[in-house]
Image (cartoon, rainbow, N blue to C red):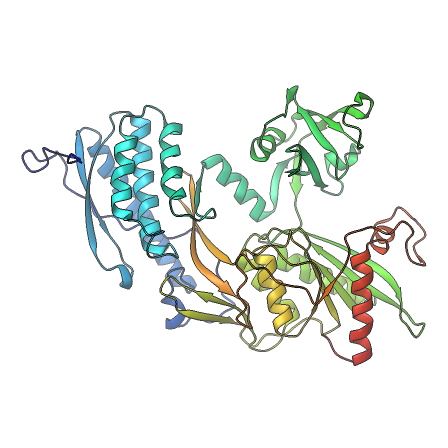
Length: 513
């Protein structure tokens, strides 16, 4: 292989090497300030740091990002450059100088900087220190060479994605600035749009409605779960992925979007396709929906069961759940069903915060395993549950990541019975770092085990009791006046019926689990 910079030793470049430290993750899937800040926890690569230390890291990162920018402005006038990378982690206390050709195309030159940022973060924090048994330093040089002749930013970003794919970890990835903005919206619970959750039907590849935000434009227009999206603003959606469709639905408040939706099972009939004009509005997303289910115990007493559906782990999940439980307690609820079915996860910190709502003391919530194989249990600190009433958690193959952390914490600490089907099996934790251009890098930084040290990754969590996925044609002796009400629908859910039976068993034992 020819040297990348054959003239480096003969003719110095107009600028000297710079030594940036890479920015710390801006959104960490780590515990919040409710956990102790000890030297042991700070030693992790995905640090659990105190607020003051986190602020110091943030300020330092901003200063150093600026120095990287100045250096690259100088690089653009040279045919080649060298780049010194210094790591501040004790385990990575070294300096590495990499020489590479610098593109004369401005937008590609900017992506080269993004490449080095991403490469450095992977080198310092990726959970597999062998980088999938490859020379990670050489991989940077190879990718730089491949990127050098390109003329567009999109083509250059493809090279970064290609480099990351060699790690063999689908969860370590880079997303565009637009995709990262969507991710942030989903995490903080605010957006401008029509109130639709959509996904891809795996068998057909069609875009279907997963759910509608109650009271939102889509719900008011009569769009329902299971409807298929056919067109958005006159553009057919064949082959369009979910992310692009979501971007088309979102937009400035006051504007409108026209969609065609197909209802029913007969895909060949145009009569079931209708066109709907939807106004875009501010949509406040709460990941929580609740219902109070009247329940008659085996001895004939009429009680109330609180049903809580948690659809995602956003920043507001724990606060919203706490408020929901307090409200149901005031209505006389004495047992709970927590539904995590088809909850793909989200912020792991939110999952840990939700667990603390149900648990007391210094219980272990999850165990993490870092790249050196060190096991670190994450415990509560003098926790106080807001209710000790019986609890059943519903899970299925769509329950993943933070859902599995929460289910494992409640199950292994004997707080809840799990009902449903084996969970997805995503036992890896990612950090999220915003890069200089607004894109974001997701890096798998640790694996996790349940409190009882059960491996979850690619295995999942088996429920205590299984249930069928069928809806009963005629609900149990229903006490709901409206047969189409949410409560009536729940009473026809066979898994909810099994959960109620398990709650009766817990009540009869006089225990909360």
